[in-house]
Length: 385
Image (cartoon, rainbow, N blue to C red; front, side, top):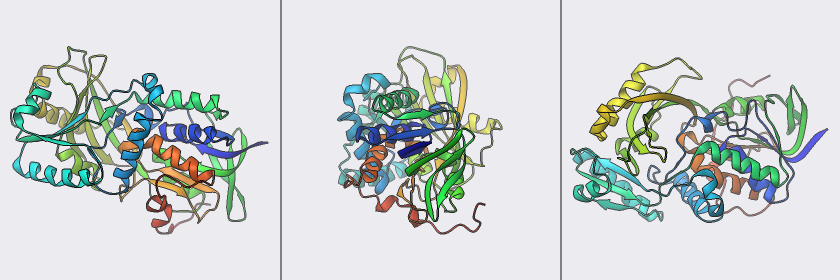
């Protein structure tokens, strides 16, 4: 019989971080995933470690906490996942968006975020090729970047070296129950028993929660990224328009697009971003690609002459209130959640992993789990059989 202290469902960045920090605490850990390690959302994103796009509240606190882990406790491993502390810049091209940006800066500073308002002349020193339409900007020195697949692979390897066991291609089809308690999962490869079952299933987190008869309204939100031909460096930081912050915090289900542009060590430029909700629809959306490209050219006009080699898209785990779901679920004792991070999952993964491991081990957590609790949602109108 497979039995452990902790069973993690999902081997993306969040699941891998949970496995790593739990194994470090001496807990026995098993990880199951319906596919290969990191083959879901973590393999189809940009690897952002951002504080700049977070407004006040628990997500900003978690981002700040996670950043300190990336830069501190995990710094010795940073070369493994190509950590780049290149900074981020938000560009405002209208006076109204600049005023909104200035309001956001004041709040972020109150939460300990390092940010500097810069004028157009200084913006041009940072990014000589940026649009001449800019009226102002903000520079965030702590915004960073990692290669997400390397993060996931190495965190899982480090978890395995600490004693965790990984079971890829092992889809969860049901939950093991003892009365009201969740005590494990049922898979085609057998049953896995555990004292704590952790739902780190990303955009599938809502479906997993329904197996336990509880409401955690996580659903997929699709986003595209374009990849250009390699070139000499012309973009030196993560650069995006002020409108991006509004799109991140929006609950609109329709297509939204705002420019997010950055260079890579290999010379290619990554161009985003779009957001749209429509389930796990894999149908190609040419409108999304067109709007991303148009917006990027407005931000960096030289891109109009640059070839795009490919695109990819992924499903981000969306939650209506834009706050991740982290912690135990008293509606189904034994079940924990660590999902709903939307496009910030890579950056927030290590903070999530550490506070989950502290709570499972019965320790005081560095951040309160109360604001992330799944109990903030109502009951299901239909309970899964």
